[in-house]
Length: 384
Image (cartoon, rainbow, N blue to C red; front, side, top):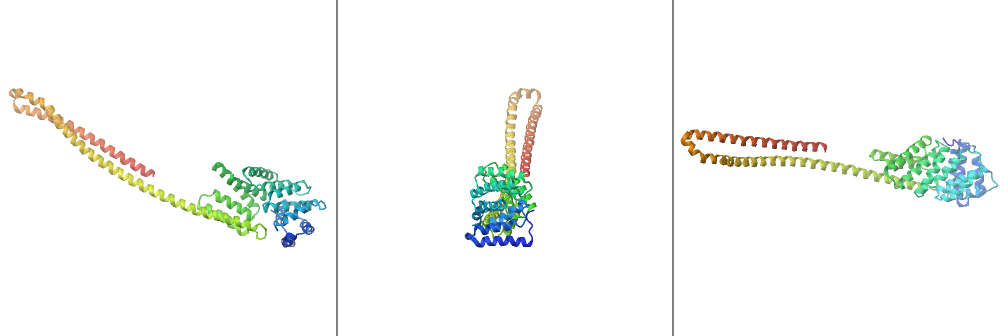
């Protein structure tokens, strides 16, 4: 779980950091070598995570520390442990100063030194991998490959898991691939940084988790959780490191992005609500207008059909009765006028019955059409 120092040991570390910071560009080679020796005398170098933590504190204590530490790493008169620790601290300091090439050069020296530290190979691979942060997509892919090798050599290491998570986060941001692939990459990174936080509660772990939650989140709750992580990282960030101002700027940028995302999401929700309301209102009015129009058309059509059928009926009766009327005069003379009239009335009744039956069936058909239109409108409204 990292270095556990006694009160006296913590005072020694703080004193060394203070000396380095106070010396500035006047930091002397011999004085720093003595301070490295004092750190080695603390006897905490059976834990590679403790070595890295102390090296990080020394390497980032001053902007002049990396150059002075690199000189110690190249000094053949010192022990391998002194040179290795100085190389490690210099590599971390150069990386945090934004000089990855110089960091890699010092890491090459560290890899060639023979020291009895556990997992040194994994630590070197880890530091080489995170030097690709800020590179292009191809560089990030190389960094991810190195980081996966480091994690395989030293599993369940908080620092190594976070390093891989950070690389995956940046890779997802800059890689123009499918959104599903990008989200899968970020979900893997979120699992890794959550595992790192279970091991160590470091501010930078919370910062990376907040950035991931912000990019994966879709709801107001997700964005609020991301903001909580970003605020926690900012509150716990060290103010003594020489790159602390840059880190606070990064925190401010990410929190601003989260606030913008929150405002945009609220606007999207309100826009969706208004669109749904407008669509429902339009659908209701459309259904009502369609139903009223159908009923009006049906009524007008029924009246026109009735008139047409009536006219057709008169014409039919007239045409049917015309030949009868012209041929009945002889029959009247033999059968009598009343018998002829009764026959004509019976024939007319049959024709009018046929006309009424046709009108009745047409009206029933129109009623079915109207009911079908109304049912269709009801189904459409329900689906809305």
